[in-house]
Length: 137
Image (cartoon, rainbow, N blue to C red):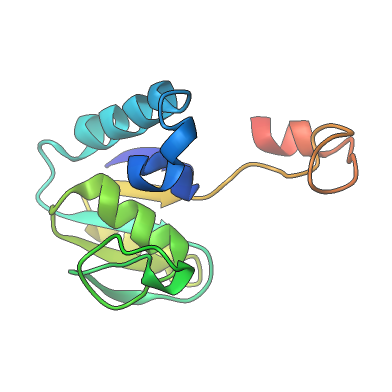
């Protein structure tokens, strides 16, 4: 099994990033390269998302966030970002609640998540000295 850890920021999508699209090019390129590396020879792909989920990723959309990107009903942000990165590859969405039982069924796993929001004084959350070690784990 191959695994890629990917961020769930909608700014990966150039239509959303608009003015910052160029600045985020390296991150976008790294994310798409990771998906290609992990999924290119896979016969089955799982998208691991926080919480409870167990369904096929056939369509996705960011319309729920007010952005007309995607080709289906509005979906959770991690699912939509994975859908965009997969660019039409079939996958199955698995929540962390089922991960231990279900992930061994797949050749490739895209683990969708973000790092801590408490790494510095300027972070969205208050500085937490445990944030960096958590992200490094």
